[in-house]
Amino acid sequence: MVILQTVIGALVTFVFVTLLGNWVLQNWQQRSWLNQQRFLGKQTEYNALKDLFEEIVSLAGRRITRMRRLQRVLRGGDDELVKARLEEYDKIQTEWNDRLNSFYVRLRFYAADYEMADRLEKQIQNKFVSIGSRLEQAVKHRQEGPRPASHVVTELDNNLNDLYRIIIVYTRDMLRYIEDIKKETYFGVEVKLKINTLELFPTRQLFVALFKPRIQTHRIIRTAIDLGEPKRSCD
Image (cartoon, rainbow, N blue to C red; front, side, top):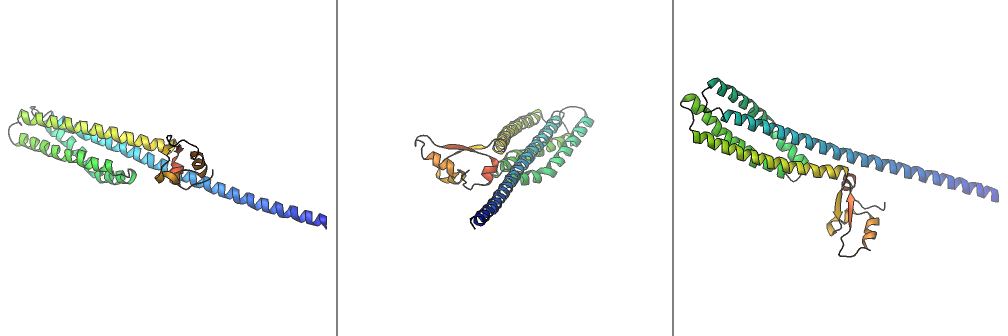
């Protein structure tokens, strides 16, 4: 009887341990898979934003270059050269306008604060439109009559220089933004312990924070995976 009880007890223990082990393993595998999917999703967003940045910078640079090339021949005597430069400018302008709405949509999707999309519209696109309008008027004036006055060409040159500086600043700020996304995705970000960040801290880290001096704010590094799942855990 004792032997039977021992065997039954061992069998029950074996079954319990097996079921518990399988449950733990399945939960660990599921959690690992979800974490991997979160990382892949964040990585995809980072790559998409980086590609978008390269698209905007390349096309904006090509457009302002074509505008400069056209502006610089306005007072020359080669009508065919002016016509060729105008065709080049018209082509890049059409390409930019065709893709502009896509730029706005993707910037608002991947850059959540909308700042980069708003700046693209208000600081760069509006300048492209106003300077382009004056440039086209100068070309039309040249084709219909005398060459545009030197002060008109000089003013266009100054306007294009201002626009170039705006594009440089925009490019710099967007590059910094993308670098921040890259760090968050691959290396994590530092999170300070505050009331509104409590949910990002594992229980173990909250316990550790109890023994930190008040003057020293407790910090941890959270990866893109962790930020995607802001629930506390004991790990």
